[in-house]
Image 1 (tube, helix red, strand yellow):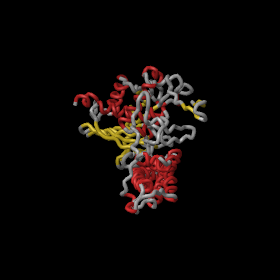
Image 2 (image 1 turned 90 degrees about the vertical axis):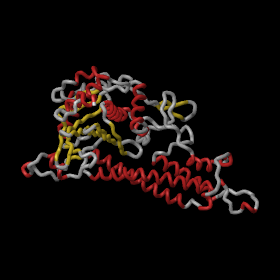
Image 3 (image 1 turned 180 degrees about the vertical axis):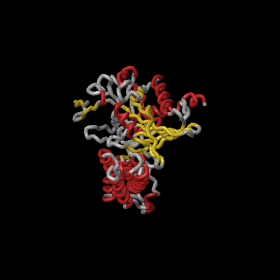
Image 4 (image 1 turned 135 degrees about the horizontal axis):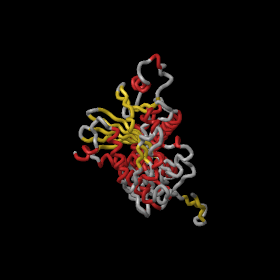
Length: 448
């Protein structure tokens, strides 16, 4: 929602509306805090601003430069100021004893260039593993739409890497050894010229990253889409429930400027639970798949033995639509189990009303039947009762979808960001049902 303001002129106020029928303002704040506590602010705030009609304000010069594209923008702005100073350096009358001593106003260029070079190098180190991962993911067999996104992301990261290299080369030409040791104090002397003020940005500490009900230091970023936040918070809620049941472990995530996918490796005794968000199962390579009369194993087993899979996320899908939000792997001394789930931020008054076959439980059921977990040339398929959907609360509003023909084994979880006993109970039942024979009873987990 936008509104043109009379004062200041040419300013537009953009409001982000929370659908109160689904979540309250307090729910959104609680979700953001949960995500930030488990991951980092990049999961909550849209720092990419992919859409041109989404914008933000820059309330102060202490701009956050933790993101590669923003750091590049800052350096490009400052480069023009530094080049101007090099073309027309500052001068002053001074005694003979001061001859050869660089002025602080000129020396700051070298010190700025050295600092920005270090910051760009740090960003380059953080980008490199993501570029390797994005390239490897793009080289695998993927559904068409996912392939387009992966190619686009790999291209974007390559362009950032090239631009950082160009900026570092330009900065190296501005560094003079005799100026690096000069005493430069950010006092009134360096505030007299707009070029010097620009260069001083490199030495300013980043603003405090804190979210409150009244003001946010990150408020110059627009919040991420609520649907995306709900999906990400859903996996954070799952991990919190597992920790409540006695599991512990760490998280790893991918993405340079926004969280693209993440994985938790949790253990409790001899039990291992791996939770994947946006795992991106590889698609069966049907161009190489032999016809059924020429092979003696099912499709998934053939793909497990003949395709290049992600070592950390060895999942395979048989259909173009094989991108669930959540995949949970459970390993015990007695065997393995696979659970699959999706998140859906929708109203029960509208979801699936046009056609029940369009509702999320049917989507998850299709995932459950067509996605497998490869261990070597063996495949673990999803348990018949291992499908679940995360809907917004309350639970009783979704009762119509609990007994859908063909999808009635799908568990509906409706957690509230403020806490939900019923959702926790259903999640425990999901674990109990999907791990029959593997001795992963909730009672044992709680009592140990």
